[in-house]
Image 1 (cartoon, one colour):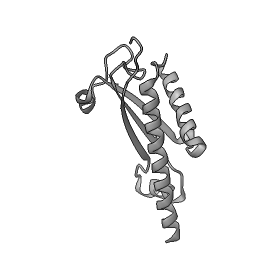
Image 2 (cartoon, rainbow, N blue to C red):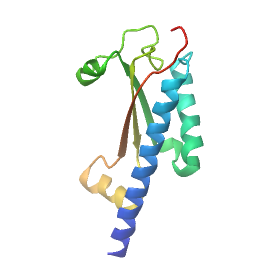
Image 3 (cartoon, rainbow, N blue to C red):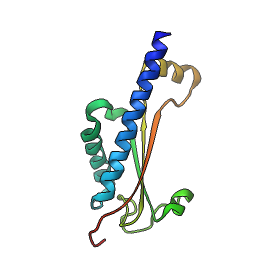
Image 4 (cartoon, one colour):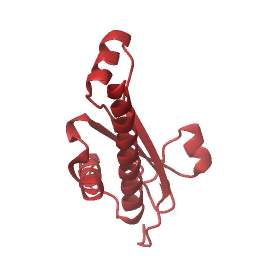
Length: 136
């Protein structure tokens, strides 16, 4: 029973950290110039995550997705931005959606994966509008 209490507390802790990290990446991306490449975009996101939460998240178990949408309606429809920087963090005014997925490796989570074939990953989502003032 005590193990279950620790598992729930750990789950809430990871959930909070992941949520903070997702919002930090969204804020950073909304204020930065577009990345030169998709790899550069993810590298910058990892740097922001490290600055926000330190080494609380194992980067090998963290998946980062960043999508840009022309407006909230396009975001709801899943229609990615077709702008010049749509794949690199979005153009000025685009909606930026950051999705983080983290796979904790606690004993209970490993057991669930083995026995139930469940996806036990923790997920976080953050949305921000690009607010750059540069002439993009």
